[in-house]
Length: 443
Image 1 (cartoon, helix red, strand yellow):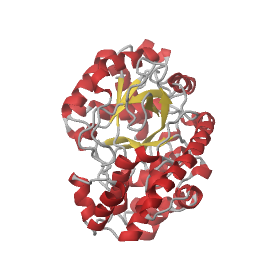
Image 2 (cartoon, helix red, strand yellow):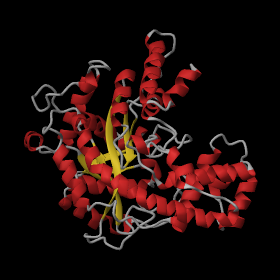
Image 3 (cartoon, one colour):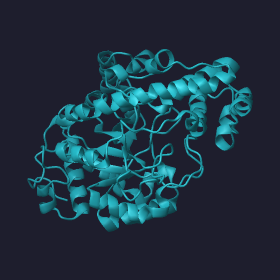
Image 4 (tube, one colour):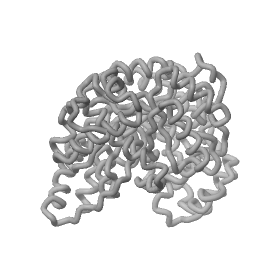
């Protein structure tokens, strides 16, 4: 059993999926007890196609074993893992939703020069493409590939800059030797800042071993004063996820030392919206909000879009964004309530997901157990209904809006369609083209 689970992270996609089929046969035969499913959802799980310890197959399996009702893949600049994630969902019997995340330019907007939702660069914003129809994944890949290639030119430059910086500490970083092999770049994956810093985390651990010595080393060599939860984790030499906590500290404090502003790989926000409209996906702004104590340890306290959030949301609505995606556990109750209120006021679809890219992060978002967040569960099912709808009849199509002018009614309709379809069976349901808006399932 242990070997089968480990093979869900095998190098070859075919081996990952065949291992999953074999593993699931034990559950279906009753030799293993299936996990108890709950109403929880997560639409923002990263995989090895951006940065994560989980392949798409492993991510889907762990989402199911943790009791999620639905799971969503969300990689940076990549749709390379989407088909595998869909197939893994079919094998397991968990409903899935697919998308990607991308940084875009906001220079030609009223927010030029502002720190928006990107800790590393002003006038740049993270966006999420949700609910990609499964027959349009190749179109999305054709759009992303040149941006990914341009990003890697800058990645090489940043790796060289980091190498020059860490040599004073007796360490070396080489892009081709240390960084690129960590990624799925040759299979349509992306290389991120986490990929650039992860080899440094490993080299520091190899040099000193995990424990208090690392904390002293960071202070002496890089002037990084570790505190709070991160200090506790890095002082613990027995921490099984030590390298990921160390990576979080490095990302929160060192990116500024090697970061080069993105240019060639940042499309204008309008290009992102144009793609979404052409393939029937849902363009979403990724809300960050002012950061205090970072949950994952990879962000320092900083002010972002809260000071001008009202103005921003009006702009997003007028620009053609259909949704805002956010992470309830990353923000205060006051931040989330304000954001949800503004979304409701302006008719903007709310999507939630916990940014899973490290093994210590829980798949379950406890905030969704509260009544005020129950609508986010319907939103996840609505995404699944939207994806599996016939092309052109998704949640924001003219047909859907004409039949259900209220966003709440549309969300409930598509959520009901998806739940109904999912109950038909794990292998058939996710691939069936839904005849949405035909009156079969009302809101």
